[in-house]
Amino acid sequence: MTSAATALLVVEDNEADFRLVAESAKESVLSPFAVVRAKTSAEALKIAGERDFDLVLLDLGLPDSVGLETLTKLVKKFSHLPIVVQTGLDDEKLGLEALQKGAQDYLVKGRTQGDGLIRALRHAMERKRAESALRGMEDRYRDLFSSIIEGFCVIEVLFDAAGQPDDYRFLEINRTFEEQTGLHGAQGKLMRDLAPDHEAHWFETYGKVALTGEPTRFVNEAKALNRWFEVYACRVGGPESRKVAICFNDITERKRAEKALRESEERFKAIAETTPVGIGVIGVPESKFLYVNPTYEKVFGYAEGELLGRETPAIYWNIEDRNRIREILKKERVVADYEVKLKRKDGTPFWGLSSVRPVTYGGRPALLGSFVDITDRKRAEEVLQRDKEAIERLVRERTDELVDAQVELERSKRLSDVGMLASTVAHELRNPLAAINLAAHNIKRKANNPDLEKHLVTIGKKVAESGQIITNLLFYSRLKPPHNENVDLFGLLEEALELSEGKRKEHVSVDREFDSIRGLSVESDSVQLKEVFQNLLNNAYDAVPDDGGRIKVTAKNGEEFVQVVVEDNGPGMGKDVLEKAFDPFFTTKAKGTGLGLSVCKQIVAMHDGEIEIKSEPGRGTSVIVRLPKKAVVSHK
Image 1 (cartoon, one colour):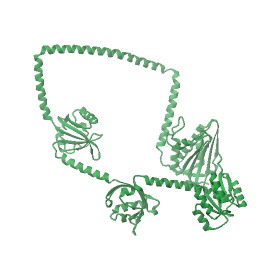
Image 2 (cartoon, rainbow, N blue to C red):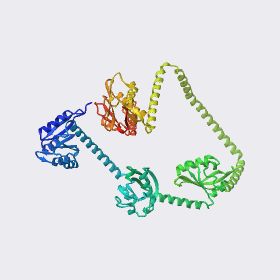
Image 3 (cartoon, one colour):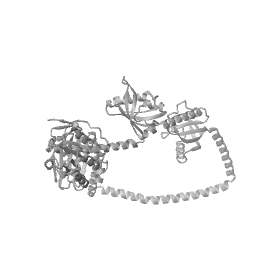
Image 4 (spheres, one colour):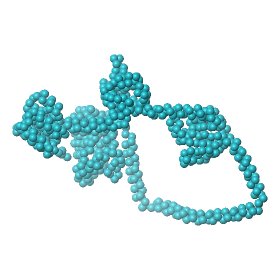
């Protein structure tokens, strides 16, 4: 796959100098140049406005412009273009000024020719790209820094002559900082100037982070600011920087609420300890006692603290009563004056009039239950009930004949209704039971039919596919930091190609161009890197056509990275697919899990590398993996 030509605008009025540049560009072996010439600054500005260029080579001695005037105009109008100044003047001051005004390089004619000139041009393009990427990162960082709702700042910790932290200066603060701390105009100022009584533990904590590099998370009070803070702090840069980044939240209101809650609970306990009503607090959802007052313990016959941690079913005579109370709570949120039969520790029953409502206790959801012992009242009610029953019995005895006749009539009617119901049910159930029996017989008979074999094969395939999906999911979820060792990258690529050979179609060709890395070892996790290359090869095999498919695996030992590229001549991907290619569970395959490229990206990132996809519809796909040179050791 050939690269597009680099569009180069040469602003040069001297014919011989232009011819040297054009010939050098023509002889470039890396990629071609498309050279366009402008003889004056006015012509250069006109041409640059009409066409897209990748690079400008500018002579400072032009018929209509001498010095840096043309450079200033080009930079102002076409700031995205990398501009290399080439002049016959060997003037270090002029060169420095050119760089300050936006030039990527300053070359002296006669000193940089041929390959050296081409390398200088390419380096200028790469520097410009790097600058653009860096500005984009800085803009994103600044947007994030300004928009987060937490307070954020970067400080420089100051140490005294004995090496003890005794102050710090605010280097950066975000918009929320002032609202969270109450400190105004803090940037550039010292903490002791802003709050002279600030406690020593803040300086000690940040000093330790700055010296050791160990991040810390804590909650503490800043009495000088009359606030509580929840803080995360980590070092920025090396130990010599003495800089610490701090992300924090003002939790003063939460702390006040917690204090108010504690005081409320203390008042509750003071009342509960003296009331003659039994009071208990039950945790939700585990239904265990969190608190009971002395009356509660005394009535139930338990010693002090003996009920704490016990489950509530232990106090109910019938567990159905507890379930009924829960149902009422769900519907009405409150249970009031519910008569319930309870059980003392020794197993004897008694009656209580119970009320329950939801509360917050110790910062967690709970139920507050209270009861009054109504056993004596219930006994009186039982006596009254017995008396009532005796009177009713006497009345019934005086009207025996009428009552007996009515009872006999009702009993006959009920027996008739029951008989009809039994007959109907027996008839209605017989038919479905027969159908079920017949279906069972047919299934048993068909189990020996060979025609069912293809269904069993299909089931087996689907089980295998499901197993593979589960395997992929497990691999994705259990990714661990790499176990690094010296790995022969050349041999690893060969092994990945062999393992993926099973997916190769008959008329698919595979080109290998990675001899340049023979003898190099990469400090990495061989299992994880093999998974990356196998995934990329499998994707390529899936993408290429059955007839005429081409896959190419290349490797390059660059200045900073070892680069491996897997190319295919498949259908390629559109922009909408490319944007989601690394998303987990996104796939365009009928049977894919969408985890392959996501796994690859995680593994390469854990090796401090980069992975990139280049693809266009109808032009195939290239996946580029770059591993940093710092991890490479030569075996030659």
